Amino acid sequence: MTDEPHDADERAPMGDAIIDGATFAELQDAAGADFVRELVQTFLEEAPLMLSQLREARDAGNADAFRRAAHSLKSNSLTFGAEALAAMARTLELDGLAAAPSSDALDTLQGEYERAAAALAALSHG
Image 1: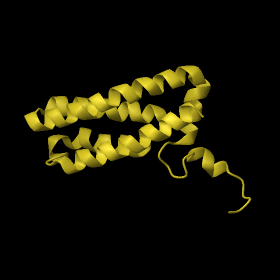
Image 2: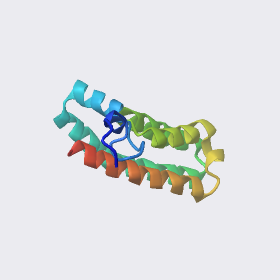
Image 3: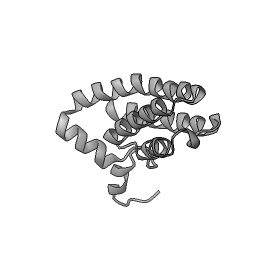
Image 4: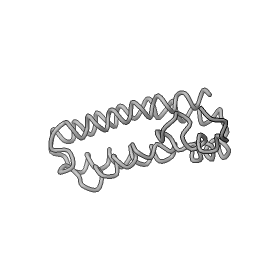
């Protein structure tokens, strides 16, 4: 361990870039920490529903519902600085059902959501 300044840590509070610290800090500055805690809680409740909607839409072959769910997840993820999660959701949104021919892509997305959810929970109560 070194005694270097930790400016880079502000961008990656969890030790890697799960959540962009600058984006999260800007949100807190704009909306207030208490309101951001509420927003995070809402996201943690709604994102699993969006993930379920993605699976259901893929299974039903419903391209419109699939893109809408991916778009919602992408937009909400960007709000909090969950850039990797947003990028994955963006790919699903743009490529549609072809991006998730099997459960693999959605399983990977689920795993990234779980990492982002843990990081957001820690940051919002930090």
